[in-house]
Image (cartoon, rainbow, N blue to C red; front, side):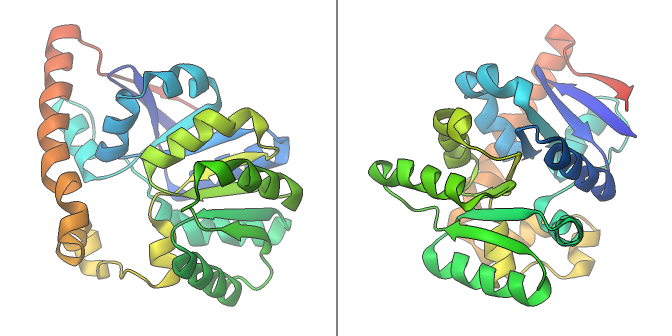
Length: 254
């Protein structure tokens, strides 16, 4: 069962990993060009500042509740302790399904070194995966059309974008209609973990929901804004809108 949470005019879905994997597989089977986004505090802040993207693509996007900050916000406002899903934990579950169905994927994101290492590890752990192509996410605007052409000519079913929400939203805003794919999965920094470029927090730290703090100590400069500034922007706005507009609501759907 999915739980739909409306947070400041944005609807996000609380579910588990098996159901989210099934949602992506269903979009692939039905060949519906759906955008799958993990909605944590940082991504929420970006998307709420990008009305053009939301207004144009909300019909095609599915936003999934992610992160301890989102869970705390919902709880403070009287919601239950909702399930959340992140891309790193979803990755092995989804790739097992992609292998079984022989669906083709294209990876776009990270540096050349990181994406090459990610591809090597994916092939090692999922030898039957149908990898139709991949490219670094650091490309010039002049080469963007070539990237789109390469994705389309690869014949991939699923485009996996790992460029961070700012650039992912910008890329999709300009190229969604041009992409001949069945689904698009936005994964942020997933390739850094898959490649081994960055370590994940130990399971004990992840279990008590302190992976965000571990990631700050690993990358203090890169994660400072996300760790300390974003919550200061996020929580006051959410609480203010809840108590002045009563727009934080919850309903149950399937």
